[in-house]
Length: 81
Image (tube, rainbow, N blue to C red; front, side, top):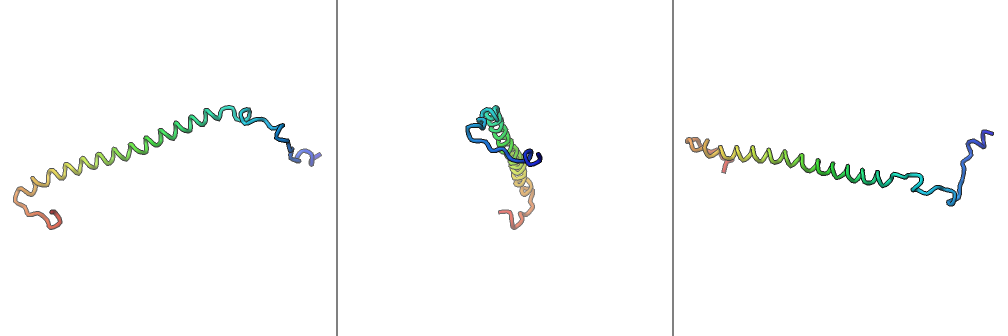
C-alpha cells in the first residue's frame, strides 16, 4: 500500500493538460513584469541624474564666486590656472 502511494505517476504527453489550462494568467504576469521593469529602469535613470544636476549647479556657483574672491587682491594658488 505504501509503495503505491509514493510511486510516481507517469503520464503520456496526450494526458497532460496544456500550459494554457495549467497557467491561465501567464500573459497577465508577463505584462505586469514588463511594466515593473520599465518603471524600475525609469526610476534608476532619473534619480542619479537629479543628483548630478544638483552637483553641477553647486559647482557652477562655486566657480562663479572664485573670480570675485581673487579680485580682492589675493594671490591665486599654484593649482588654480
